[in-house]
Length: 93
Image (cartoon, rainbow, N blue to C red; front, top):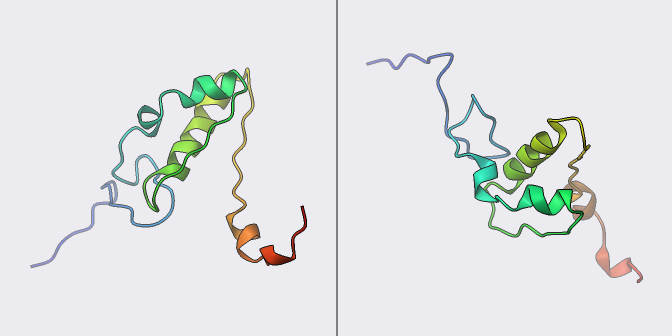
């Protein structure tokens, strides 16, 4: 019995951000409805959640939503790789 791969089929994602049209996913903005308002009113917030729970996917969707009307410009960057190679004991405050 052979399983044929359908070119337009969705997949379950087990690493990295989810991509609409490629992965099964829920609406990332619905998971954090207050985030856009916090950004537009220049407030800070923290997203703290376990691995693979949608943090990056949600933030990338938020950036796309904010940038969508051309009135504001949001960027997303991760310092994960930078921090992972730094010896924090040598840091001074």
